[in-house]
Image 1 (spheres, rainbow, N blue to C red):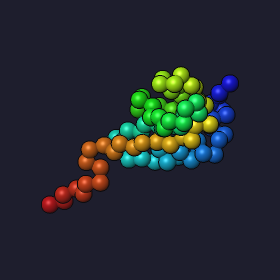
Image 2: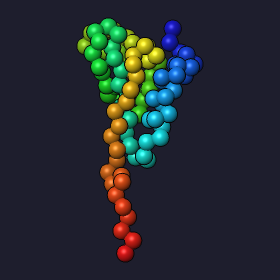
Image 3: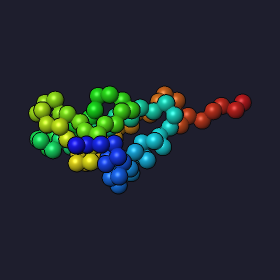
Image 4: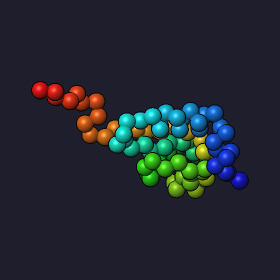
Length: 87
């Protein structure tokens, strides 16, 4: 059974979480994984949400987060990186 405790003990999951948490304020994170049933790279459609497992609706396989080569897609909010005009 997949548990949050097991997921948080996985070094790769911790690395991805650390990177995702250090994103600029206002950013949106979509987690990605590789389906262990069909091998397709899949993106979770719920932003800023990490689960102990992900169901690939196309093939019906449920992949544990620690098995799914976890990564993330980052969408940076508007205005990020723009310099403030100090005139």
